[in-house]
Image (cartoon, rainbow, N blue to C red; front, side):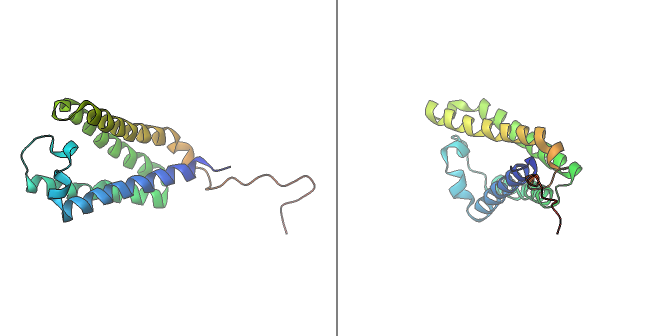
Length: 149
């Protein structure tokens, strides 16, 4: 049986990679990121602001990555709570600008953002157990085995 610790660590690594990918893409090719319909939403291009956003994504990547490495209870909760705060606010920002895209694109974007918020909430719910448990819970020794050498 795979313990909650494994799933929380896997989620933290995935979220770390998400933020690193966003940061690298935006910092190296801000215009190509901005040209995505769900990013520009028919607004004027601002390279400085976009580069700031790219750089900002490095901060949660660091916190989530260190939390994945250490599985420290306080850091784990703080990293997840700060990332949850960002993604929740991000969800509501996009909710205010649904008029900029087609209904299908709006539905796709809002579903992806809602899933990201739900992932953080789920990980936060499991985090207290994950910080205390080993990676893999071993099966109990078979009847008659002592488990020692």
